[in-house]
Image (cartoon, rainbow, N blue to C red; front, side, top):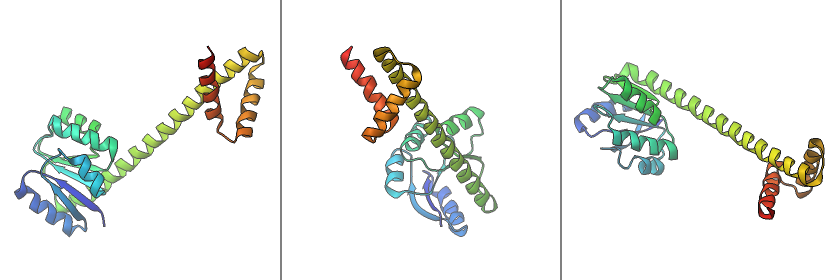
Length: 191
């Protein structure tokens, strides 16, 4: 059963949504009246999905979503009556997985929730892949710099510098990039 956090300052609008969610098999674990403490609440309660129901997303709401998305990312559905293209773009940039204009009916609820979760998971996988690629690129850069320092200091070619780094890393039982960083830092101290 998916755990849902609702954010809506109109209690009369929230009651039918809570009912719809319960009927669809979702557990509503919290109801916030605004997004001011969204990050703290998500961190504490760990919902599977956050649904924000608002007439139009304000700048403050979008900033609170950005903070939450950076610290504790979760799929976010935003139900609104504002179909403005710029608002949709801003909400998506902030971390909203699904932007729904108009009401959220029983028959639309499950497919929209599933799509939002799938989009969130895909984005999360892409972000993880990007972080890995950036980390590998940073490792390559520092290894190249360390090789250059060794080549210059010892008068050896690139292959020999790489073998030397690799052997030292294996002997010390550390990652090649870690050793390369140590070489670069040591060179900075000596220069």
